[in-house]
Amino acid sequence: MSMPRKINAADLKKYAPELKAGEKILLTGTVYTSRDAAHKRIKAMIDNGEKLPFDLENACIYYAGPTPAPEGRPIGSCGPTTSGRMDKFAPLFLDMGLGGMIGKGERSCEVRDAVVRNGAVYLCAVGGAGALAAHCIKKCEVIAFEDLGCESVKKLYVEDFPLIVADDCSGGDIFSEGRQKYSLDNM
Image 1 (cartoon, rainbow, N blue to C red):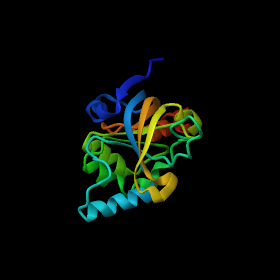
Image 2 (cartoon, rainbow, N blue to C red; image 1 turned 180 degrees about the vertical axis):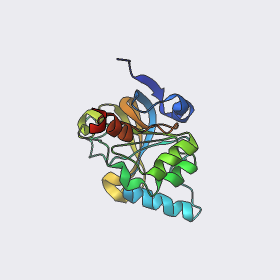
Image 3 (tube, one colour; image 1 turned 90 degrees about the vertical axis):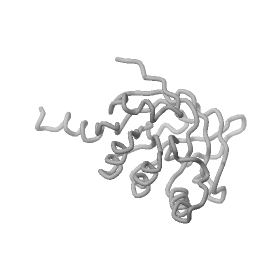
Image 4 (cartoon, one colour; image 1 turned 60 degrees about the vertical axis):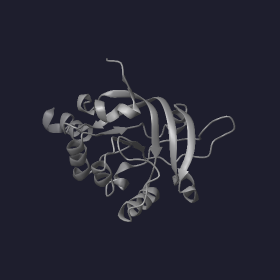
């Protein structure tokens, strides 16, 4: 069993061509939280030619809505949300330079195609382990849409955040590959 590869979030797009579906990585660096409501506002800002809360170029978005921070911690529980809810926005964001996305669950064909087209990557975090994921988050700052509460856009600094490459920029997809590998036809 190979050790997870350590990657800085700022270099995610640079290393994306080397990453393969199913590979484990430990991500360190800046990621931004954004979910449904924030994605909708960011899309409206794009449509209106407004300055975005963060530069999409080479950024990594974590689909999460963290709970309030307990005393002495930068953040509360911070597990991934279902990524498919952001599928209508992801191709545009990827075409604008987004380097990676973190969430849980399968993505649409349009998102997988945009990952390949843009040399990006989709990573999965373990669902149901938000309290454990929070231990990898060292800093948290609300940078946009504070009125959305847990769904506001936050700038996080993560250290050794354990993730699995779900969709690579060569077209690999752990969900379809897993179904093929474990189908009754292959038994």
